[in-house]
Amino acid sequence: MTKDDKLEAGKVWLVGAGPGDPDLLTIKAARLIAHADALVFDHLVSEGIMDLARPDARRIYAGKEASNHTLPQQSINNLLVDLAREGLSVIRLKGGDPFIFGRGGEELETLAASGTPFEVVPGITAATGCAAYSGFPLTHRDHAQAVTFVTGHLKDGTVNLDWPALARPGQTVVFYMGLGAAGEIAHQMINHGLSSLTPAAVVCNGTSPTQRTLLATLGTLAERIAETRIKPPALIVVGSVVNLHAKLNWFEQK
Ligand code: SAH
Image 1 (tube, helix red, strand yellow):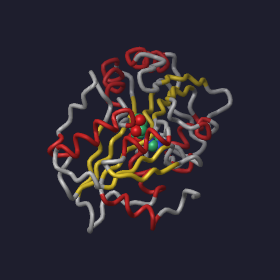
Image 2: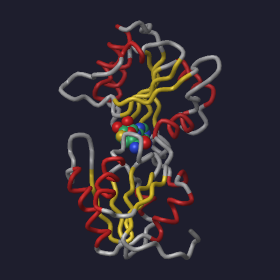
Image 3: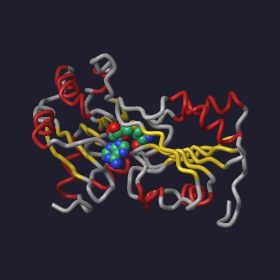
């Protein structure tokens, strides 16, 4: 699309808003946001990004802080269909990438079932955004030959993950939504064979001016989180790549 194009009526764009810094939007996302009739957005979408919308655009907050869902998922799914049926061009804006722990798939299934046309625009996910702005690569020939993105969100108090696979050496493991489960995560990683001295980091508010990186080890992770009272949104990154932060940090003021 070009800058002056009008968006198609009755269509939904599922758009990744990136991890925080508005400059990390794709050009496509920025153009769509600037033209949409209605925007349905989550709490992780930064204000600077919403400022790009038309002054007369309808803005609907769909919420979603952990366990405090402002709109239940089914209502969000139905809302998107209803707005499109009103003949609006609708942007569904999600933090990071809509297909990484974003429930984007569920929303699209409802759109598809209702015959509503849609497109998907990828975004920079928190893991790659935080790694770049915190100064550690997620893979590195000397440290990690693989990277795994995994959810640390607890259902029924246990983290039901493939711990033997996650505790294998030579990789970087990034836990989304893991702050509340940091103690359990560290305990399981150590129990499944990693040294308690394995480097671990927490990056909170990644890519925003308030970004903060906390360095720890698996052994000290939970304690460090408790004493610094770091708050979500935050990622936990486990693996020796985080040691490179000391040398490669270019963004955070120390
Ligand atoms: N779709 C999003 C992830 C949504 S799940 C993406 O691709 O990034 C929400 C989790 O993402 C948070 O609990 C946190 O773990 C992580 N997250 C999102 N934005 C973040 C940020 N700016 N800094 C650190 N972690 C972030």
